[in-house]
Length: 595
Ligand SMILES: Cc1ncc(C[n+]2csc(CCOP(=O)(O)OP(=O)(O)O)c2C)c(N)n1
Ligand SMILES: [Mg+2]
Image 1 (cartoon, helix red, strand yellow):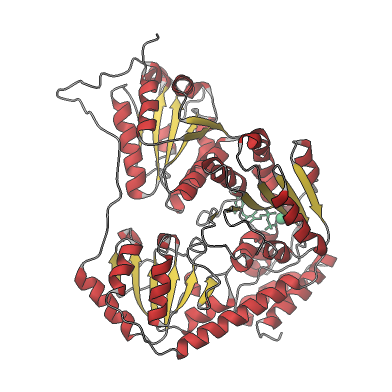
Image 2 (spheres, protein in one colour; image 1 turned 90 degrees about the vertical axis):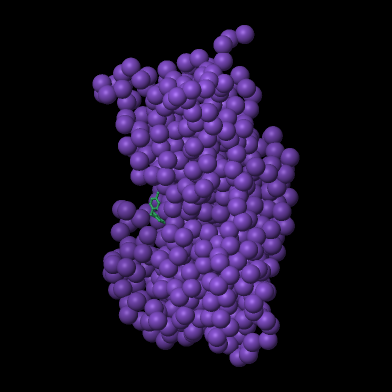
């Protein structure tokens, strides 16, 4: 039997940290580790089509499972490709460990082939921890440090492994002496609670409020019942950040839905009208949609002290776990608040639901994308997992999709990188092969990386206990979100050379790969397509041919904010521009603006 080498020790350490699979792409820089994975048989190696999607898969794994995502790449170009996915982890605060190969130590500094200064390259994205190993003895210690730091700081970390270190004989685990560091894997989450006097101060502030708004973010996962109970006792309205959308059932009469540019009119009203604000586990950057500074007295709960008071001036910042802290607050807040405010909140919510239903029902050319996403309501299997890409689909997801309790949904939120839907969906599927996946993506995102990762779906679906993996492409032949941003923010007309996307036959492409493809060109075919996809014995791609003329209208804005959109559209001499103008007028009117 061959001598154990340092890469074997690394792989044992991954197992020690409970890693089931590693997402990556091979290359000679990481050959040592790949050989060790082959010898050990676990963790499983998941080959992506590109290192960026491997990194997105690692982020997706962390988001769907709550564990650490691991990605693996070779030196040089492979390492560079990882960056975007690692930034996604950094900006959405997810633990990811990147293991990256490097040239042999003897050539480093000589400008050798594929030689890149990797600790510098990853210095920003993995600012919490990035270290190259110089000796075999460092490797188990660095791996332990990388996992522990990723978990403790909810961020990506990186270990760089020169080729010769990977293949060097394994270090002696019993060595003992000066300059010898022997470490161990494992970290258990702590119970984090603010001090009693601070919880009392927060409860006093909340009890004094007459019009309370609660904004929940991803930090409130698992605390839905507590948020709902507190909202009842305070007669409060609840809004969600984009990342917090799956936390609490949006069917609750006091849930105003997602807040912000892509959010609902009800959330805008809630924030404008409140005198008291409770932020729970949210870092939502859309500050112009928060109450005006000084308008509301605020309490914020966050597990990360660095986030307290950074989005809104907060009177009582509570450093703590959301569930534990909410429980402590509930012990000090009795039911029975006046409910006039609550009646207003519920009226805003009802009105938003009417607006949303009418918008989705509006005729479009040929299909209204809001109708495509809204039609999933009631059809989404109760055990589904949802992934969403970046583009106009995020607006329709945020505004129209009602997630059944227990159905997770994830996307690249703070980095907002295109290309998250397919790799996230694959990570969700591999973590739970018995649950159906629904991935929602724009045509631009499909062309950027989704079509490539469809190959991974095609390669793997026969191994899945439930082979349903439904990819819905909102095919509008446009980079529509940006076309609308150019109109709204710059007052610029759409510039076809930068915004038009090539036609692709997505459904036929899926069929070529052995999957099922359904092309939808009429409003009445949407529901049947979803039903067929959920009945299918294999992954299905729905190519929904939708209208790029549906505006991405921010809710409740004064005319001055929307005027550039009109100006941009006025400069567009096309059928699309005319249709877009008509849709914009209609959607403004349904919010009560008469322009
Ligand atoms: C990697 C990356 N590049 C560019 C952007 C800017 N961007 C945001 S949305 C968008 C358009 C996406 O187009 P598509 O996937 O077709 O979705 P649509 O908005 O048309 O529905 C672009 C280019 C981004 N967010 N991420
Ligand atoms: Mg598009």
